[in-house]
Length: 294
Image 1 (tube, helix red, strand yellow):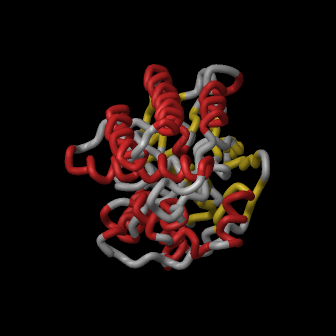
Image 2 (spheres, rainbow, N blue to C red):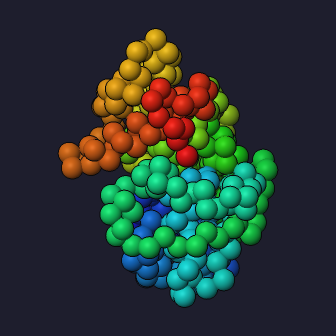
């Protein structure tokens, strides 16, 4: 765990999204949560060792299955107390309308080997108690915490900006070590979101990704190249006789944009392939020879 200005702490050693928290006299405001219950327990213990009292809020930074699982696991722990979940309105609508849809095998495959192998049980989904549409601001002691809706990677995705500390938590909008799930993406909107990083209040901010930690300007440029490569691959798929095989090849070629241990290659490529397939089927219908993905 690393300590930053403004009573902010970050943790990047979990298998799922990186986590962060803002400590304050009224409690702790968490940004995302560890994926597994044991990790969530360690996270709470580490926060208490840093002087945290109660857990007040956890910000669910999009509607993805990973974050739904992680936040539910954290909320289920007795030591979490009356933790309040904060999310964008879209995320709340997804959880409210069809929570069981997040349990389909296709989406669970994006969570990694632990879930596929039945490493631990999936918790019941928990709906966010506080929602917003455009932005929401917390004044956490001397730290201002701005939640801003920034779709692209996911319709309910948000960024968390700490202007005084010049910190910007972008969730899955940027990634360096694990590709985000592409199946909910709007690629043109996503690229425009990245362009926002070069102007306005975010121009001087230090960027923190849930998929790799600190991100440099060069890495932002590289990730934008990845998204354009995804667009190109989807476009060329239209002319392919065997698009399923080409999806597999596309996932392998796109994996070079990320750094990850060799043993995670199968998981990374399957995650990319699934996202590409869902994007394709959303626009063009089922791939030849198979039923539509869930």
